Image (cartoon, rainbow, N blue to C red):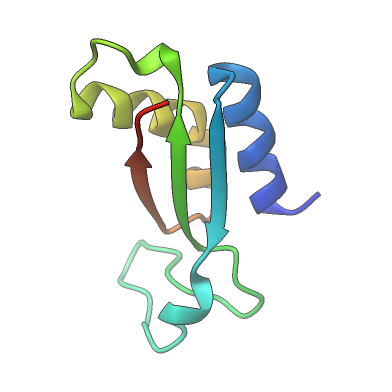
Length: 92
């Protein structure tokens, strides 16, 4: 299963979103060299993602709390080589 699909599946199960888009933007970062201790960009992509999500589970939470929940949910993927996540929380 692709990293993109794994991210989609995990977020869908945890947050039951009314809108969920997982966009692989790795190609836009192909010129970036990894920093020491960082996976950075790699051949084949699946390192840089934009997530657009709308869910009632974020109601009343600060932006920071919302982002922390997403990051916690995707901890395994981040540890396995996802280098960057841009998280856009939109109104349901």
